[in-house]
Structure formats: structure tokens, C-alpha cells
Length: 146
Image 1 (tube, helix red, strand yellow):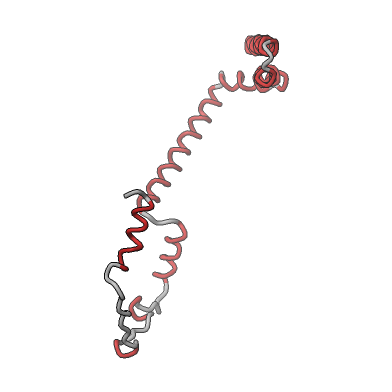
Image 2 (image 1 turned 45 degrees about the vertical axis):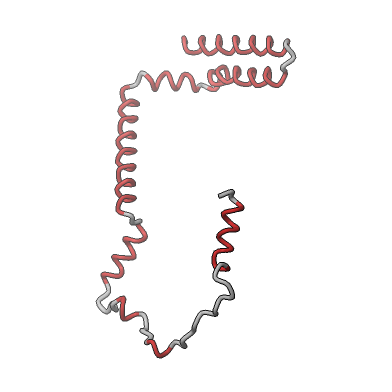
């Protein structure tokens, strides 16, 4: 009962402020203030305020909020530990599947080794001037004023 009275008074005061603001020819601000001031009376009319008042004085509701808080702390702790390890659930599942295989191949044996004889020897093309190598770098530095 008291909460409904307070919400009604807040709405009435907000509408009064909106009227004064509109009188000063600041219509957009007045409409915004009126919208904010109608929220408390709307919450009273929908029953949200009564539900909140019943919840605020209920020990069972506070115990439920405590359980939700503990669950949130546990969840965030596991997320922090998971991030510190640097692995995700998918990576752990994939690693578990890999270790479960008995005929797994060593990582070095999976890639074919290429000897030096299979690649053609290439030499870099000779540069016409030695300062061509740094001309791009100088242009970038000049562009940034360095």
C-alpha cells in the first residue's frame, strides 16, 4: 500500500516537471520526462510493485537469490579456470577422442618429409639499387610524419 502511494506521488511529480518543461518550450525533453514519470504508475497498475514487495519480505525468495548467486559464482569460476588453461570444451573433447585411438599416428609421421633435392634452387633477383629495399619503409614513415 505504501509502495503504491509512493509510486503514484513520483509519477505525479514527474508529470508536473514535464508540464513545466513543456511550458519552457522544450517539448522533446518534456515528452521524455513524461514517459519516465509514467513508468512507476504503470508498474503499480500491472502488479509488479506488489510482487516486488512480497518478494522483498519473503525469506524463501532471499534464499532463492542466494542460491542463484552461488550458482553464478560457480559458473564464473569455471569459466575463469577454463580461460586460464587456454582450452575450450571442444578442444578437450577432441583431445579425449585422439587419446582414445589405439592406432594413432605420430605427428611427425603424418607429414611427408621433403629433402633438399626435391626443391629447385632459386636465387633472389639482384636489386638495381640498395636503397630500393627501404624506399617503401621510408614512404610509410613520411606518411605518418616520422
